[in-house]
Image (cartoon, rainbow, N blue to C red; front, side, top):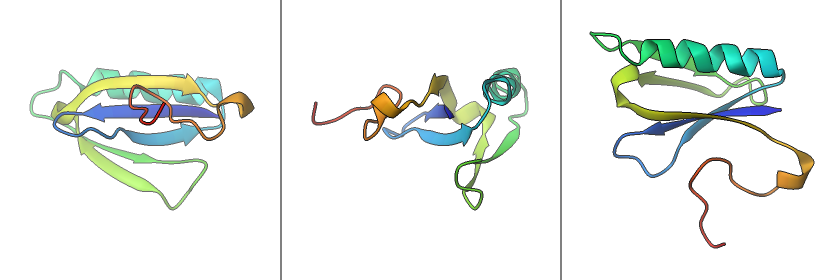
Length: 87
């Protein structure tokens, strides 16, 4: 499972969605990166393959970073990305 984290301006918690396949995660990453410099900002709508009912919409000008990481069994119970507290 691959996690795509969007770090948003003025928000300490990333927005995350997941993809089962690495190719799908990389394609979504490229789609988001291509939307970042667009003027006017684009509305990016995302769904999660792990939780199909999870949907999020974000304006491209509010994204400050995009992180793709592989979620493995060794990482169970740990947060992905840059925001880890209590460790």
